[in-house]
Image (tube, rainbow, N blue to C red; front, side, top):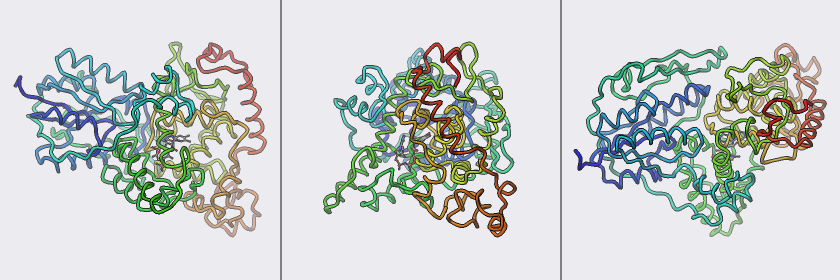
Length: 566
Ligand code: FAD
């Protein structure tokens, strides 16, 4: 046994076989046995309220990965272990005589702390630990170091930081063969070593409800076969999204998108329409990037090759950051910024890059600075506005359609995210970006700790972007893209029969037209919950005053709440 190489390969942010530098490193060890595992991380299910669509996507991606592993070796599969990695992994290393633990590096603060803990525990037992970058094009830590330890707050600062770093290499092919796992017997573990997992679910029809608690008696699951759980087993209702998970689907989507070389080469994000949804104007690859079903280098090089081919035909391409490659750079920028800031990146408190704006509804913190979940109710008017925004019942069809699309599909276009985030924060409602980010955390399939918090700070003018006088109109903005209101008609069907010119402001429609359309505003669809123009001016004034104060989230006045209320 001593002479053999026994690898535990821990899948996390890399549910794929193509271009997986970590998996290649594991296979380069020429292991006698390789156990491909996934463990439930309680952080994922306890600290985040994860909606059914993200869970569904994850389970589908795991199934697809397992099938691909089996195609490489009929004796293997993805082994799902029920239990937190800090407990499970040391136990498995000892039960299966593991010599090497290999995984894809995750620099996001929570994961980095968790991994350091797991690493320390198994190193003690003599296991070698190898982590390899693969989730981003550049190592966020190397970018941070090159930027003097500071967060990259713009694409140009990010570019300057990566200037002397090696650029992304071409992707690696998927392996053809994977060694089998060894025996999978387990000693019995007691309940206390293996806490039950609780899952929050969202019942889209009946509203939210606290989910059931699912207990497993063994690490290996109820059937004892390390099988992938079903949604039903986890206590979820069926998913509502049409977005399918998995590496196979990711590669199919990428190929489909790249078939139109002109579209790839001339891609200009601000010109893509948020009102187009079937298929969307952008790639809809973010969920696959989030779970690592698609490697970033695969994405980058397919796009680059596509553009090279197009240029050979004489076409003229668009440039970063508007083009597709530029989109990947925004992702890199947020990853590097999060790496520099650590856990405070996801909140205002203690966050030195986040301007302190005295939002009406903020998260509450206890004396040690930990977020209070659930937080106490805030001002009832603001809470009601937040609830209406979340439910897609603000009385502004553009906002409502987007929020309903988000809830149903788990994905919305970037400019749709802009619209609803701006509306909730500095545009009209003046509610903290943290509260909106929590809703995105629950409902987005592609939710990501770096991209979500980073973009919410951007949209609320808390960091990255500061032009707070530029507010998205809830009528004028969608009219630029879609005069006939296709998105609204799809997701707010009660408005489907309104005339084009009133689709974004149905409350000013004459009663006779409302009757003809079969929808009375104020009864069948809400009246606008606020005066868009009045609130916009108030918001701009408040943010301007906050900018004048010049406080940041780590300022003591921001921490103890003594900043001047506006
Ligand atoms: P494409 O336009 O096709 O872009 C290709 C890829 O580039 C995307 O798949 C994504 O991986 C990356 N990308 C594009 N734009 C951005 C961006 N602004 N920031 C980071 N990466 C980007 N993206 C997430 O992946 N997870 C999130 O949690 C998330 N939260 C957001 C919250 C708000 C308030 C806003 C305004 C944006 C958020 N985004 C998030 C960024 C962006 O909206 C999505 O990545 C993009 O819309 C996904 O659609 P796509 O795959 O069709 O993008």
